[in-house]
Amino acid sequence: MTLKPEFRRSAILAATLALLAALATSPARADRCDDLANQLKNQVDGLKVGITAANIIYLSHPQAKELSLGCTGRNYKNELYAKQEGRKPQPAFLDLVGGAAALVFTVPKDDTLTGTSRCMKRMGLLRGDTIKMRYRRLNYECTRTKTDASIAITRGTDE
Image 1: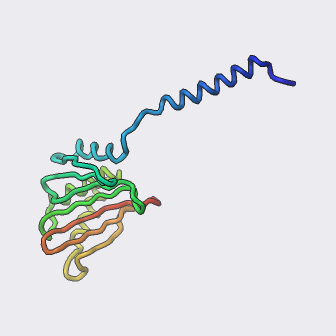
Image 2: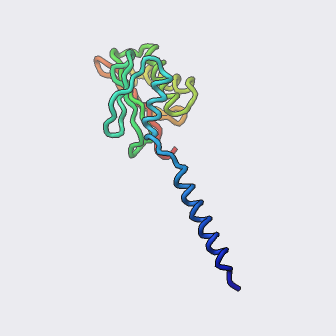
Image 3: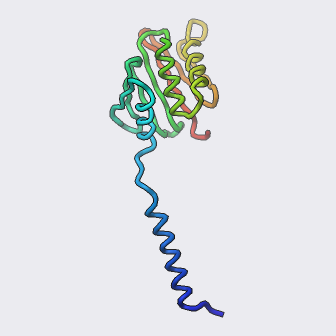
């Protein structure tokens, strides 16, 4: 028993149309990292988006000396890096980093603010000037020198 030629042609035509429709409906999207940086700019007051180089988008804010958003590296999905002048963390700086991390990693702001403040406050005479910790599936690394303090928040590629 064979299929009629009209049915074969209409089945092939339908399959071809379905394939073309699937390819035509996928819109051209900007990089996910650029979308994330624009979302940060819209949500955080005073934040400006700078240049992009090697999967890192440089940001600027009055509370931070340096601020950058890293996207999809070998060991992490996203990374938020912030540096402030002074060894002691300022509450406005902690609020900036906690709010930005909440948007980047889609975690509640209370959790990222708690992780950020814990990491920054643990640095000292007893524990040293570099602290690595894990809180709510995020990796925090805080470092301080004689003139400034920095924090890097990442999420691993396996999470």
